[in-house]
Length: 69
Image (cartoon, rainbow, N blue to C red; front, side, top):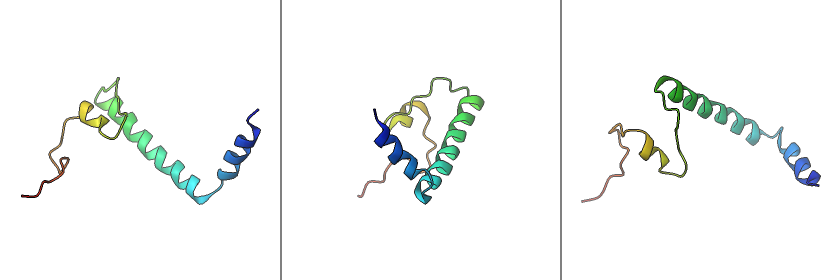
């Protein structure tokens, strides 16, 4: 039924952009696996751009945008 879409996805599989994206995803997934295992964050929710603000404490290293004046 969706064979055209599958063919398109397969055509992207060997592109440099896809290969880089795959490497980057592995790094991110590994980082979150360590967070969950080491810090016992079993129910980690990170949806949206600001999702980590609800789950992780601020480190105080420039997490907040600076205001002028």
